[in-house]
Amino acid sequence: MIVFKKLAHLQSFLEKKRLSGAKIGFVPTMGAMHQGHISLITASKANTNITVSSIFVNPTQFNDPKDFEKYPITIEKDIDMLELAGCDALLLPSIADMYPNGTKNLPHYDLGFVETVLDGKYRPGHFQGVCQVVHRLLDIVKPDVLFLGQKDYQQCMVIKKMIALTGLSTSINICPTLRETDGLAMSSRNMRLNTEERKKAVLIFQTLQFVKQQIKSGYLNDIKERAFNYLNAEGFKADYIEIANAENLHLQEFWDGKMPLVILAAAYLNEVRLIDNMLH
Ligand code: AMP
Image 1: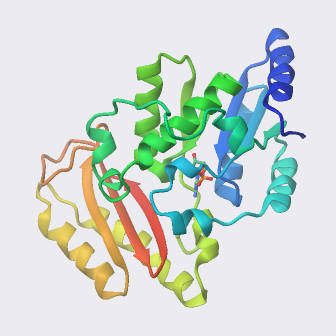
Image 2: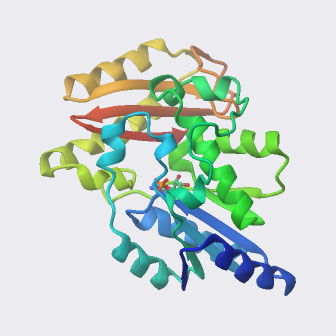
Image 3: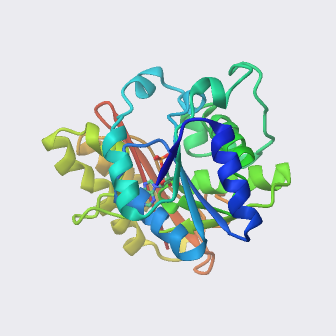
């Protein structure tokens, strides 16, 4: 794997590959790699000829400065894991390279409803930051296919919308959520959980499963409320547990028994905010 710190070096490497007909896959990350990230590398390798990853902890997407400061950084281990997975190129850009004119006047994207619902409501500005960094990275890498994790369900929808708005030609491949053996969705933030919190964290997955099993056509409020109260009684501070139309994230209070649904949860365990979702 070639590690690039300079954008121009990566770009000329990719230009040569492109000219020889290679299809380029891209896996953007914030590092602190786990097998969930690696599954995206594996998917890219199976579907493209050259796999590029990036590690950049993007300051513009953190609405909480404490969360940014405490974001885990394990760069040496990340490089080893990417190398082992067969990633071809890794970009490690600096903040100055990513935002040469600073972070004050970055583009604003007209994302509509999908920006303000769920995580958008609890993390104001977050999805604008996500779009700014992904748009910039797509301009640099110009991949044929962008690999994203279903773990960040709303993020996938937001990025889809940004790509449509900007007219980029990259296609999106959404990969399933990788989980620990007890069901907890793999996440870089799991590293911040102590032993007791780690044991408890699985309740988010179990609650989603419970909701999924309980959903029947008709009104959904009772089951949502029970799940929300359960998490809080177990020591979480839940932001939401919601049931939405899987295609557009419109929140549902009633199910006709046919519409594809997604159940989404976000909850704090002390200082660590965890999210997860499940399709129904
Ligand atoms: P992050 O480093 O958290 O920004 O994540 C980088 C990419 O990995 C995003 O597309 C995430 O959705 C994806 N990802 C994170 N966790 C998982 C997981 N458990 N399974 C699959 N993909 C994941």
